[in-house]
Image (cartoon, rainbow, N blue to C red; front, side, top):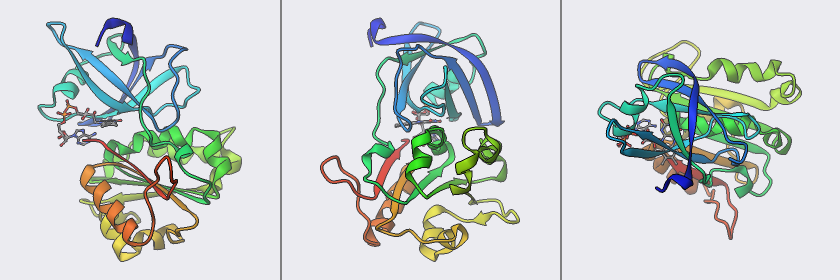
Length: 256
Ligand SMILES: Cc1cc2nc3c(=O)[nH]c(=O)nc-3n(C[C@H](O)[C@H](O)[C@H](O)COP(=O)(O)OP(=O)(O)OC[C@H]3O[C@@H](n4cnc5c(N)ncnc54)[C@H](O)[C@@H]3O)c2cc1C
């Protein structure tokens, strides 16, 4: 990619969530614009000056002065092995173009917004939660985060703090944060995968209402097998994929 197509941003902070999970903030150019739910293309230079690029969802709000990203570290992963070595003050390249269609404007008005994620697939949903319009448009926002182990619930505290937030508190009763753990067994946390808990009805029982074709708008993000299987289950229940010509119930993003 030619140098006029990207900017050089500086890492301003790092947060470690687990051995293989961390978040980082970078500086942001005022001209860099995106819609909540979209992703950036990030580049990291190697020792020989070669650049590896990967898509990364924005975690930060569209109005934040920084960009924030939430990353896995893949053993032997070309990009994440480089990324994980960076420190505050180091440089990350950000493609000037914003990308992606996992945005609420792809839906016609609904009542219940279901945000279904595995692992780092949570990232775009934090940005969507920071969008005031999301809270205005929906009666319920159901954020489902599925991880393997209890300690992988990144952003748990931040999600819990919407109820105390000076701007979001009046709407915070709309948010239902449903954690799922697939490997550990933890008291008071649903055990299992999104697909099995949807099939059994346990997910909707825990949330307190069902996925209703007329009311539900559903975003699915993360592991491609989960995305494909969940989509299939929902389509079998009469829900439809959203398309630009024909808005429906479901929008998805695969992370690999
Ligand atoms: C639209 C889009 C948005 C994305 N946003 C994010 C994001 O916000 N945070 C993030 O960590 N990744 C995100 N990814 C994945 C990211 O682009 C890279 O794949 C990831 O950083 C690993 O890069 P790598 O070169 O180290 O390994 P790669 O060679 O890219 O991947 C190697 C393998 O690692 C596994 N893997 C890749 N990404 C993940 C992941 N996120 N979680 C679990 N396993 C994974 C897969 O099995 C994959 O085949 C996104 C991908 C897409 C397509």
